Amino acid sequence: MQKKDIDWGSLGFSYRHTDYSYFSNYKDGAWDEGTLTPDHTITLSECAGLLHYCQEVFEGLKAYTSKNGDIVCFRPDQNAERMYNSAQRLCMPPFPKERFIEAVEDVIRANAAWVPPYGSGATLYIRPYMFATGDVIGVKPALEYQFRILTTPVGPYYSGGVKPVKLKVSDYDRAAPHGTGNIKAGLNYAMSLYPSVQAHAEGYADNMYLDPQSRTYVEETGGANLLFVKEDGTLVVPQSATDSILPSVTRRSLVDVATKMLGMTVEQRPVKFSEIGDFVECGMCGTAAVISPVGEVDKDDEKIVYGMEETGPVMRKLRETLTGIQDGEIPDQFGWVHKVDCE
Image 1 (spheres, rainbow, N blue to C red):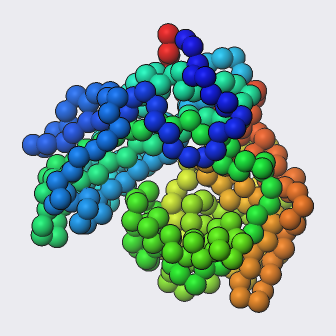
Image 2: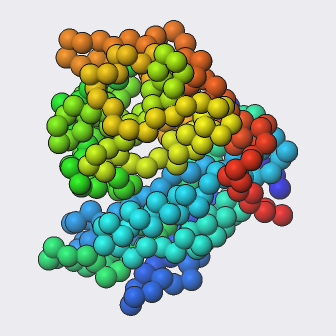
């Protein structure tokens, strides 16, 4: 198979068309067989439920070339599970989990020439998403939906390498108590756009959000979960009393790496903002960057500094271990790496 003639090393984190997308329609109470398409456009009714009542959920994962030349993706079953749960929360008919994985394989196979070579630092980003296509004028769930998957080759999320960034504690909330913060829906990200633009204009990489009920506990950033490290090396993972933190696949994987491979102690618990100054490292974790170190957190006139010069040793080790598993440089004892047969 001939790879596309692309300068893989210069790719940014942006969208470009590949050869095929995938789609399947839900109508009359059932999903159709689904198919690949070279058409990357969507036609909707002006009364589609997506446009009026925001019935939309999505996922994000990557395909890449491992050290031995295989095309693989990472834990697609977890993305299938999370999208299933997200759809149920928004009264959408969940796309079957087995078919989700099959569709991901199909679209990777069809776009194999767009999967960057090993060592390039680039990946094929995969975006499964689902939205209401049926007409809805009253406030209620639609009766028709479409599930789609687009792919696009992307470079590293941070083109300048993994360097510590600054966060600002937002005056806004990204989710409501007992709302939809724990599902991957576009409406949650829409809420974060205004404070995100503000933070970027002030020189911050992202916002740190506090719990929406008491505003005393740390939750997550606009696009990633948070991690902290105690002075004794304990990994501390914030949890939410109101179930408003997205269950990150990367976070879950890093916890397993920490406990089962690196022998670390892990605490998964609510974390008060007042205690984060006692930690020695902070990081953001997610599909795009795996781990991005946080060097400083600012709240009004208060500055909590972890160090802007380099990634802390615990965050660095966690990131190197997980990416090593993904790339095939470290044995995958968990069975997380999912090979896609492209022959």
